[in-house]
Length: 237
Image 1 (cartoon, rainbow, N blue to C red):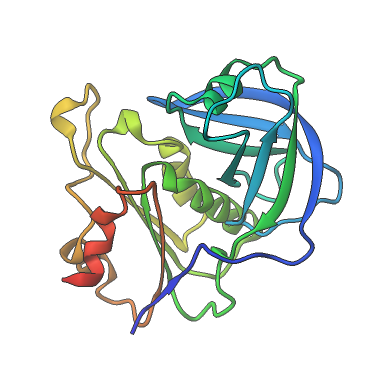
Image 2 (image 1 turned 120 degrees about the vertical axis):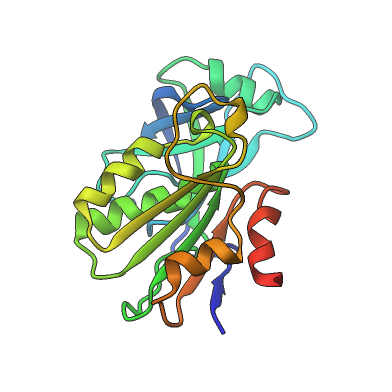
């Protein structure tokens, strides 16, 4: 039976440090990426996450000043990147407007949503919306390391406009012949961009068409609460 990797675990050698915001930009409709300084020698595995604490924020609410984020950058990048859907909370309003150079506290890494050691079994990633962040880290790392691991990434969004990192995930297919992207849009009637790829939610039929020759893959699932129900049905049908 295929194995699902859990996102709930902790890693050894967790550390904490402060780092400054270097850059922020919109990477999809309503989604922003934030790049911070990365301490020299700080090590994490592609796919892991961190906890971020705002220091002396200008406002706060019942959600508090700490959030957990998957690390969207890979080990080779000079900065540490996280990306998030910009809900209207005090934490995210502060994150969106704070000055470049503002420091935050980082704790981590943690999590075990990392590529398995058995390269004889394909890794199948099922991502919904902002759930792409840990997989962006992994596929970037795999391309740069020339990993022999076969990776198939299924990526669901409402529209191309809503899909963080879509263009670079498409380009990575040229850099890594072991990697395949299947992006699917569920609400193209609301889009202003052309789309020639898959449409509809990721389901058993779609998986079967692309994984017909794949024996005993290991599945990884990531996405915002509620949205991953569009992927979980693959396990129930």
